[in-house]
Length: 124
Image (cartoon, rainbow, N blue to C red; front, side, top):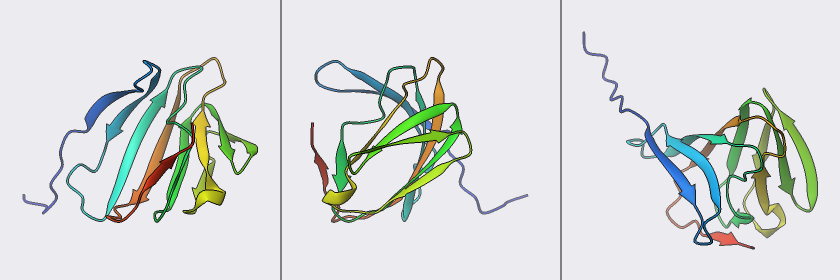
């Protein structure tokens, strides 16, 4: 039976900064989608998902699947536990970084539209 769905195995990659800092283990769950991206990311204790940044055009949706995370957003510390989510609009006022300050691995879904004219501005 043909469903019309094109399912690819997730593309996994370990994110590492030029400084050698290991970030999360990321899986692209929508490698062949054209309008939005969904990433599943596992963050080990003490790791962050990215550098502190904001997007100039695109929104970002975060959903915690497992564990406890801290979202630093607009100079505030927000605790996110499994089942909680956050919506981040574009713009400098919405600079953010997601960190695992717990002693267990946390998993998160990151969802955002594919926006060709979006710039990511890193602040650290």
